Structure formats: structure tokens, C-alpha cells
Image (cartoon, rainbow over all chains, first blue to last red):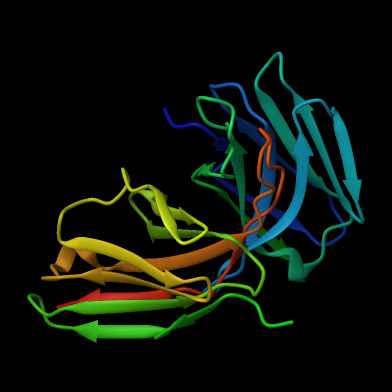
Length: 116
Length: 119
């Protein structure tokens, strides 16, 4: 299986509910990032959490990272119809020799649908 | 500020033709990444550059694919000859790499992609 696998593959909720998406990975990481992709558009960076951090907040977003379990979760609180999109986690595993060029490995994504 | 700019947004061409995709990264960024996105394979990293130098092209699927970055503000991805299985959305992304250290910790900024259809 791939580095950075999201779960569930699809999530359908009502406006106002919380949405939780999970990501698992296999190798050690420098950081883990979450991106959003609206239909027909490019990916937009949401939040980055470093390997020595356990939790991070940004507005209605909360990200947790458990390096012992090699997993992360993204929580969107009080969801809105405008949050409908695909969400991807991406891992930066650095590079042998110590130089990290910021190369990311993306998961397959979670499709979130928020119904008004 | 202008984001990453890709052109064309859509390209439809017949198999065997040469296809050139273009990317203008964000000014000041020194790393550039080319990705391909399909339903079957998801988002795949094809090649990336740092300071205009290709660092890793192991994701380029075949010799029919080539990429260049002649200067800090322009990159191309070329497919010659094109085949129907090359149909996908191709994204370019840029970021800033802090030199001399591990753990870059910088996000990537994506363009809106080129939707390529090879008939």
C-alpha cells in the first residue's frame, strides 16, 4: 500500500457536523501536510505539522499526528457546503544524506461532501 | 500575488503529436515539481527541480517524457510522441527550499493544472 493513505475514501455529512479524515503512512517523516482540492482546480495547502508536533489548529481545522502509530487525522469542525472537496495528506520523508528537497508523497484522498 | 501559472488549461490532441505543457512558478520559489493525476493512480510525482537543476526524475514514466527548467521563472514538460494513456491532469507546484538543512517544512503551491486528452 502507498505512503499516505486516507480513510475513509468518501465521507458525506450535513452542514454543521464535524468531519474527520485519517491518514496512515509507513516511513519516518519530516512533516505531514494536508491539502484540499476543489473540482477542476489545483491542490491548496491547508496545514503542515512537523514530526515533533502532536497537534495543530488553524481556524476550523485541527490536525493531530501520532508518529508512534504513523498516523494523522484532520478534523473540520462545523462544516459548510463550501468545504465540499477532496482532501489529501502528504508526507515529506526527507532524503538520504539529510537534505530535504520538500518532495511529497500524496495519498489517494478523501472525498468530502457536505450537504446544505 | 500571482500563484503558479500553467498553460494551456486544456489540451486535446491526437496520438503521436508532441505536447508541451508550461509552468511559471511563484516568484522567489526555488523548487519546482511536476505531477500527474489520474483516477486510477492518484497524484504521482514525475520530476522535481531545485535552483533549475533536475534533482529526481525517477517518476518520469518513459523516455517519451522530458522536462526542462531553463530559468527560475519557467519550466516545460514535453511528451513526444503522445499516447492515449498519457491522458491526465498535469500539475506544476513550486515551493521555497531553505538550503543547508534537513526538514524543509515548506508547503507546495499548485497551479490549476493542464487537462490533457490524447485521442
